[in-house]
Length: 459
Ligand code: NDP
Image (cartoon, rainbow, N blue to C red; front, side, top):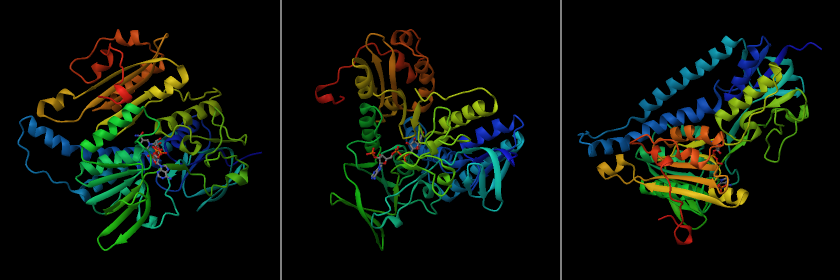
């Protein structure tokens, strides 16, 4: 049977765009539908604008540091509307590049919501029905909020945080994951009175425990109030703002209350059931190692599959799909040893297993840990501390995990990830000569095994 298109892609985010371009470059007829702006979460309301906000917020500390280094710094002021305009201009430019890249590869773009009618037919708002031989679902994820929480309609998610008309004076952020902590540092850096409310005993679940404690301590030292082990029970709107009433009886007044309590796969109202596509318990599209769904001609990549929800992973999954389906080159993406960074201040960079996971999976492990004030801090009396940690399997000496908290940890961990992905051992790692004077040199100069002080607390 002849179809209108060889490939129909739903969603022009990181995964969808990469897959569409690679497929179209083979001469395949590709149509991409996007209901919002081209670029997806990463470019439009995620990684990229977030990083600009991180850069903006870091200047506060830079001004303070500069004084310690002999500069006379006049009182600095921050213009939120001016920053937002510059940020939005840059996002528009980047989105335009995504559009051009699609066009240059020969893919066609349509703006509108797409819904599957059956396994080969898609209804696109403003375009009508089109048929396609193959379909790729790359719709990403979206933030969620507890809908039954009284007063939740007064709260926002990260989507809205990028477009606040005014910089709030006080903010409460709910959650202890990537987004909550990154935004807490952004707001804190911009001078906003910031409180994090997190239900768990510590922030950043899933990361190494020493990293988690260190990050929480550093956030507090930087001025963020971190309230652990509690939840918001209701939100009250008053004449002067909003009040976050916690279940432990504590109440915090704020101008903005932001929920960052996770994201869910965006599979609502896509017609996936009509096409027979099976979903997981979390509502993600169920896929095999080649990103193929339960329906033979339908694939899915990126956050909508809820594997590892990171932009570079979506891009690699999209590329592997295109290789498999359009280049006759069956390719899977290896989800092992994927590094990630949390752009807190200081940053976190992490690859491989936490100490707890390594002990659970590999039994005996050695730990190397160093906690120190980087030389840039000591010079002017700054208090920010770095922490680096290696987790090594006893016997094989293989490095199972590498974790860094400190300036440029995101950059450092990218390089460390190459070695860990290659299966580096501690002797090989140590044979690498240090680059001096850097923070990263500590990674290759840790010789003493670490024994935690009593009760596992880090001194
Ligand atoms: P995370 O999964 O990182 O964190 C969600 C947080 O919300 C956790 O602290 C979780 O607590 C808490 N939570 C979940 N449900 C509830 C609830 N019902 N009530 C109260 N708290 C709750 O999600 P994010 O939204 O921060 O980010 C989503 C994903 O996006 C990340 O996992 C990451 O993959 C990606 N991302 C990556 C970034 C980067 O690479 N720098 C930046 C931003 C996002 P608990 O731990 O107790 O479950």
